[in-house]
Image (cartoon, rainbow, N blue to C red; front, side):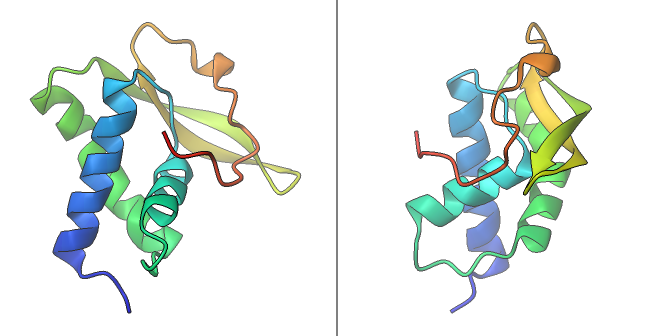
Length: 108
């Protein structure tokens, strides 16, 4: 069963805020994996979810006074380098983003 758009947006926003509160750098795929891990019944497609992340992440950062930025960065996707936005604290060097292998990450 596909997640309804409003529920998906709430889950995505909740995941984004969880990463921000913990001061973590992340990509849209990290958020997608987190949502999948915390809600295994969800049939979440990356393409649907990444649009929600891109639309909401910087607005959420402003709303909740988190100092976050987005930097286009090379990450490894199944052995091939691809460009992805890394969302990170302003005082964090995105070159230090370590989850570059874009595999499913552990939940927080």
